[in-house]
Length: 239
Image 1 (cartoon, rainbow, N blue to C red):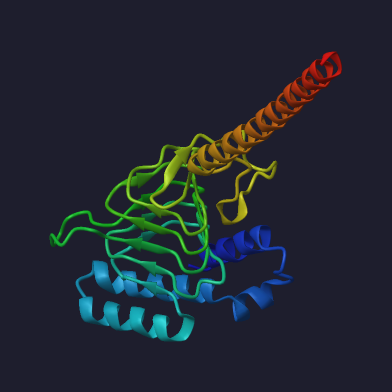
Image 2: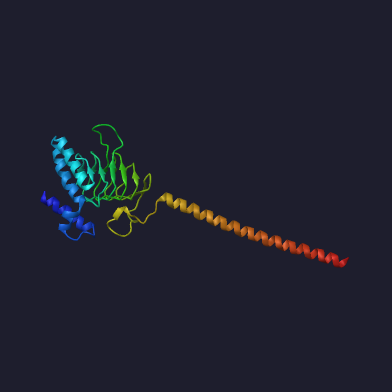
């Protein structure tokens, strides 16, 4: 137990530059407190002590603002950063080394009892603030979920999911240089945003071309008007 606690503390120190000491992490990080209490609740749950497990999870929710069902399975080195508003459902599974930010929901979309209703996160997955991952599918190892994305389909390993509903970007070589993509940030734009930007640029180009055509027509009309006036002057002189 203490070895796992040391591992949790070390992963926070490695991923949060605001963490200054182990004592600060132990006393001031609600994500760590929630994980410790979840392990106790999960211990009760798997041994058939369902009510004590649920009660411990509720106490943890009151104290930390993080709601983890005692049936959820959470690996080693998981970091819940800030944590307020995080909800992790009963059949969710979180792999080693994952990072989850505030406001994340790992939720279910099925009402079938006993079914796999909540997502499975592979190893080293990053889920950005406010993201919703809904359903009993798998998010592959090393994937990133952008902040506020709504994911309802599997995410391949190493990919990034962004938008509502989420779209998949193969972003292994598009993340912003850092080995750890905080908040699921990537240099790659949402493909829908890129398409809209292309349409806006095309419309602006067409407007510019139309303006140039109008200017050319006005110059041509002025020249024709001058030519007509000159012809009338010559006719008048002959008369």
